Image (tube, rainbow, N blue to C red; front, top):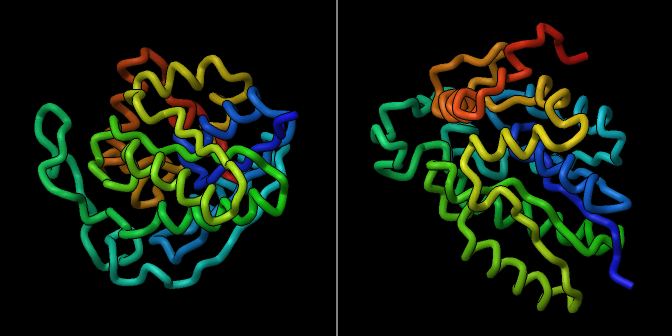
Length: 231
């Protein structure tokens, strides 16, 4: 009988929160794994803690320290963050954004697979999307497929990597969240903003993409609707 256990790579953002609640719909046991890697702000870690508690799932935080130091504006508070100027009017990325962290998802999936093995989880969820306009090479379907093959070979056990948002626009991701019980409420605590602002800064590219998705879906972002603070 196939395992009904899943592990979610969980940042505390919009996409990983949607994946977490989708995993809860599809599996009997779900746990969440969050990585701290000296990112610019700690708010997303606090978001992950709060949402994992709301979802009533086991939650583990792994501290990678300054492993990615100097590789991205996401781990360098002195570096400028990209905004709308780095994209075209059609949303296509002109060049690889400074927020790209080389090797991040490769390492995250490798470590998550090890934890999944230990917890007898047959499925990993990750909220990557090649439709997300960021242009990150480690968010593409080809990369996910290659990692699944490599992990299976390394562990001598089949672990499926689910990337359910891979071909969804932000609008479609919002529509998916609407269908998942409790997900929209949890999104009130999620952190997408590159600056870690609450309420969101609405100037960084991550905020603009999130706002566009909710607008196109005709849904008020619960993060804006709610004045609740993380506690």
